[in-house]
Image 1 (cartoon, rainbow, N blue to C red):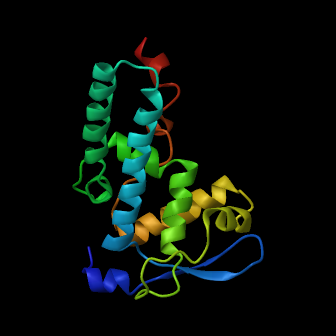
Image 2: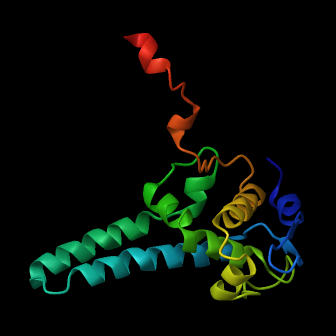
Length: 171
């Protein structure tokens, strides 16, 4: 794996579908990863907060403590580094439609040195990409590859590689 300077200095040209605009995808830096993790953690806590409505205080406290524990486990770096621990919570957030859009939003900066101020809002980005989930997933995987060389974030089903006739031969 290259050093951080060489990775950060290598944006990738992509063409946005709607208007043919050329954009640069930049690798995610620690700042963008922190923003992404905060969004993911807030989703976990918000889901728990929504679920406790009408619960007794004691039960609600238990649910919120569990949600806080789960939220604290969300770690993008740990999930995507080749030797990392693939966290189901982290991957579920990242591979959601909104998660992929957010990764793209954070990668589409004005320059490598710019503070992580989004160039596009999520609705603008979604519209630019014509809500094309295949294109969004392709761009998302480009950002992950740029940011975490060697990361294994297969979006295909793990069973897709197995032989469909394999079970028949075992009988």
